[in-house]
Image 1: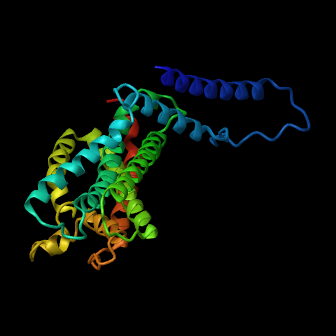
Image 2: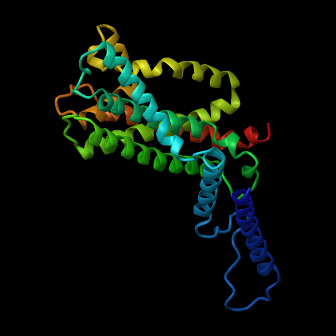
Image 3: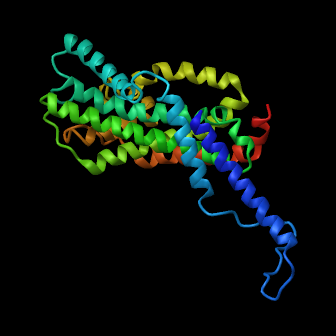
Length: 300
C-alpha cells in the first residue's frame, strides 16, 4: 500500500509540474528573451529521469507485492530452486552412479536448472506485466515499456543473487571438480535473460489479446524442462531427436552454462547467434504489437 501511494505521488507530481509549465508559458508576458514557440503538433521535451522514477517505483511495488506479503519473503526465492535441485540429485543419485558430467549431481543439475529458471521466471513476469500494472498504465507518464523493464531488472537481480548463493553452496558443500570460466557463465546468463525478455515481450501481447495462448503456453512449459538439457544433455539423445532438439534455444543456453563449469563438456553445438536471433526477433515483434495495440489491451 505504501509503495502504491509513492507511485501515485510521483505520477501526480509529474503531471502537476507539466501543467505548471504549460500555464506559465501561456500567462507569461512576452519578452525579448522568451524562446520561440514550438511548431504546432510537436511535443514538448519531457522532464529528465521520469522513466527512471517510474521504473524504480514499479520495482518497489513488485517487491512489496511478490515478496513482502509472504512469510520469509526473499528466502523462498532461494529455497524453491535449491529444493528442486536437491530432489533431482536424490532421485538420480539413487538410480545412477555418476551424473552425465562431473561427479556431483547437485552441481550438474544446478548448471541446468538455474539458467532454465532465469528464462522461465523472466518470461513469466514480463508476459503478465501489463495485467499486473494495468491500473497504473492509465497514467500517461507510465508506459508499457516501464512495466516491462521494471519486472526485468528486478527479476534478473534476484535470480543472479539466487544463482550466486546456490553455486557457492554447491562448491563449498560438495566435491565438484569443476573449473569455472566466468566469461562463459556470464554469457550463458545473458543469453537466458535476453531470451526471457524477448519471448516475454511477445507474449505480453499474445497473453492479453488471446487467452488460449496463455493456456497453451502453460501446457508447453511443463515438459520443456525435459527437452532443454536440464536433466539430459543434448548428446545423450538418440538421432534423429538430437537434430530436432537443437532448434530449442534453451538447449544452447544450458549447454553454454555447463561449458562454463566443465571444460570437458561437449558444447560444440552451442550457437549464441541463434539464441540472440530468436530473442531479438520476438522482442521486436512484441514491441511493435504493443505499441500499436496496448491502448486497446488496457481498455478491455
